[in-house]
Length: 264
Image (tube, rainbow, N blue to C red; front, side, top):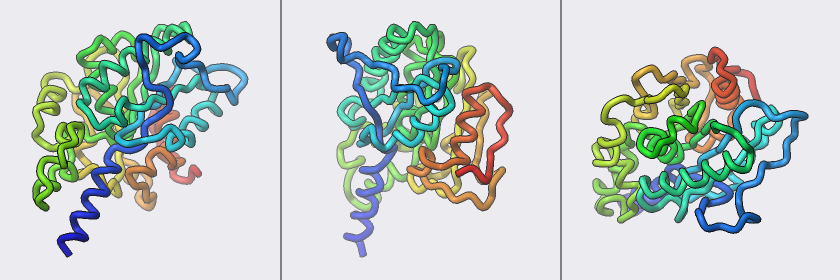
């Protein structure tokens, strides 16, 4: 029974804050390697370019469903894979992400970008905005199942005897009560003039308690089941689910949030 519990928990943490994305930013990358806009499925680009920021141990294909929806709505879309698959210090990932944002702005000529961060990607994005000058470069921030206040899933490895997150730095930082989260959550949760939105689901098996995926200080916090009580969405499902995407679309458009419970 104990072995089974360890296996389940280890698998959960390996998936924690999942799939990331396509190009990892590096200041010295050749011009041909710099981010280029994904092919648009709509006749004209809408608003700021959108960067989908993935999570821990992720591959770009996992974010293609939400990227495709964004393209169909006319957005210029980029997908960002966390350096080192997001296993290292989240602050280092945020510094690398800052360079990626600069490249996207250069390629598109846009003054600002909008961010959609899944799981750990929401923390990387938020650190960038809060501490690395991103408040002026970002228009809208949307997080999907990001453990803004930490998650007990990251704490539980110590309980079953596997030490502090089996040595994974990012997991340690996402543990409730970590120094990283104390710094991130000190002061204003939602600084700057940008619009902050968080999305969470009751069925999130990796962010527990699910209320830890919210922000204070004027952020819009959306619980999918508050509007759609019969909608079942897991942690990974937040990047696949139609109702969740209806919230993302409205947030990026600056519209009132009214989740579409029947969206596919």
